[in-house]
Length: 187
Image (tube, rainbow, N blue to C red; front, side, top):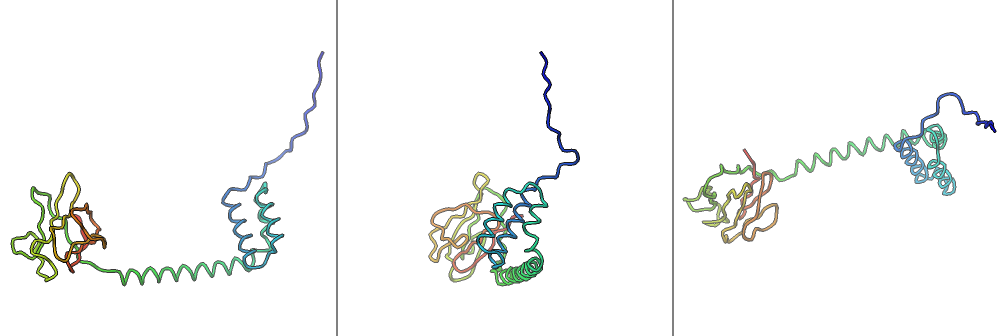
């Protein structure tokens, strides 16, 4: 016994692409901005959000945001441009006022640590009165630079934190011996 089964006709032609997550996010952003600007009521915003999440092709997303794109896009681009220029000047001002420390070159690795202080016998002699005679030492141990305060009167700091005992340091760290500050640099 044979039976014939009929299959429904399939649509012929290209299948429209589904919206990407980025396209959906852009549409949701336009809707959110429209609601925030007062151009959409709460109910209209809710309904359009539901439709945006259920959209099956990019044209549906475009239809949901078409009335919000005209003047809002230009205004938003202008606000973003002004914000970008303003942020640039803020970064420039911070860089200009940033503390500019002299470089302290990490020493060549050797068997002995570099002694730092006011005493003439130290490897790095700092003659400022806030630096102790035997202030600190900097040495390489197992591939890691270690800075050790030697009981100095005015202290040693690394990146603004006072050193008690020994602490690992690396190039780029700001170190202070008494009132004398440096930025550690590597060769």
